[in-house]
Every structure is written in structure tokens, then in C-alpha cells.
Image 1 (spheres, rainbow, N blue to C red):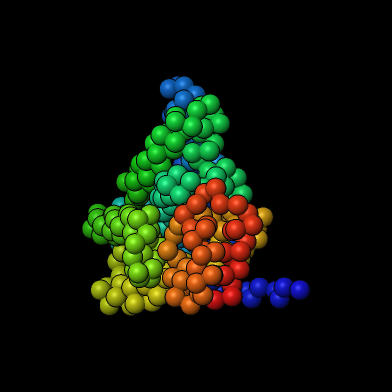
Image 2: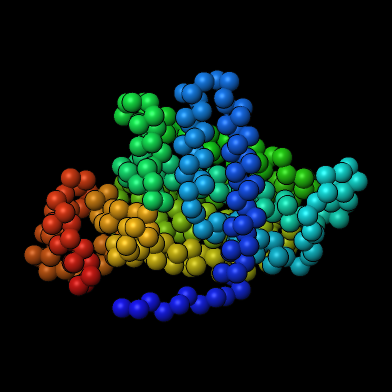
Length: 325
């Protein structure tokens, strides 16, 4: 089957531009961290290497792009690249308008925060592959020669990624009131994602969309938009409008991700086929399948659900149930 060419939109073009501008800033932040860690020895630089490998190994840079959109939704200017002079910094505080560089720098913080979530998420789910390469706990197990040390080091690698994200934000040159508001948004998106992750790993909720709203929508769409709006000093009405838009968009993002996880080509997605079933996740697809399945089909699902060691033949049979229902 021939795939139709992807439609080019204003946002897809913006996404490409933000990717190109974010990448060197992200690389610079991680290179700085590795330089600081080097005198402490390879055991410490291994942590930075794990964060760096994951962060720079692909990624759509969706969150920095949405932060950019949120800032430009505010009824005020966004200034061009900042010059590193005292006069330009004073002007920034006097005018209040964020610079493009400030938005990109906060976008880097969002990417580092995502690395923190992905590293911990992969360890909790027992996943071995992310973005076409080894997950952090797998890479650190290889580097340290011990699963025990690799898993515990991965937790620290995630903590490191979040600390680097916080430093990135702390070094922004923006008015204090806007920095405080954006930091509050930054903390709220992390809190919501943690609550959503707890619902996800326990897997008892009958409302997967609640998990999606907390775990995915909060830090994939809603949070970045609100951070951008806060940096630009958006009024309450603008922030409310962004919230109304972003909540269903974030849930849709996760629904699409669930579909890709089941039916996508692992060579293109960088994710193992049927990983959510093996992890026992109560995705919307699974809930619907269990409601509509015949008793025999439910037995097929049960043989795989939450079983890392499920045979490939059983996994394929369970995926067939998802497709047929």
C-alpha cells in the first residue's frame, strides 16, 4: 500500500524550525553537565551519558514548539534573539516581553523534564528500547556490569535530568513575576504527570482518559502551552482558552500513541510491539476490547496481559483481539 504524503501545515513547519533551534541548546546543556561530572569519575559521567543519549536520540521537540505557540498566543510581543549585555537584560525586564532565546531555553528544560519521565517510566515498565536504542536502565546495566546497579543508577539519571531542567529554568533572564508563574506551571505539570503515572502502573482505574489527562495531556500539551503563555504575561482569559483547547488535544495525543504502540512498525516507532499489553496497561483500547470481546477472546488477552514472558504467538493473538474488537 502506498502511503499518502503527509500534509504540511503551519505547525509542522514550526516544529521543524524549533527542532533545529532547540537541538544545539540541548546539546550544549548536556555537554556542560558532562564537563562538570568528568572530574568525579566514570561512574558519574555514565549518568550524564545515559541522559544525553536518550535526549539527543530523536524526539519530536513537540513541547518546546507548543511553548512557543503559547507565548505567541498572548497579546504581546516576543522579541528577537537577546544580546548578552546588561543594557539588553535591563530592557527585557523593563519591557517584560520574553526573548526568543528565553523561550528556546525553557523548551530545553521541557525536553530534560521529559527525559526524566521517560527514564523512570521505562524502568517501571521494564522496557528495553526507547527511540530505537537501549533504555537508560539497560544502557547503565551494560556500562556498570550489573542489573542491580544499572536500575538504581537509572533512577539517579532521571533525577539528574530533572535537576538540569530546573537549572535551565533558574538561569532564564525573564521578569521575576513571570518566572514565578511559569515555575508554578512547570511544577503543576510534573505533579499531574506523577499522579497519572501512579494510576497507570497500578492499573485499576476504569477511566483511562483520567490517566491520559494527568499523565500525558498535562505535560505534553497543557503544560507547555501554559508555560509559554506565562512567560509572555498572558491574561487569565488567554490561559483559560489554552486550557480548554489543550485538555482534549492531550488525550488525543495519548490515544494516538496507544494505536502506534499496538499497530506501529517498531523500526519506525522505536517501541516494542505490544509493549503496553505485556506491561499490563489499561489503555482505552484494552478496556474497549474487554467489554466487547467474546469469552474466548478475553482468555487470549488474559494470557498476555501483564506478562513480560508471554510467547510471541500469544501476543500476536491478543493483538488480533484488539484489532477485531
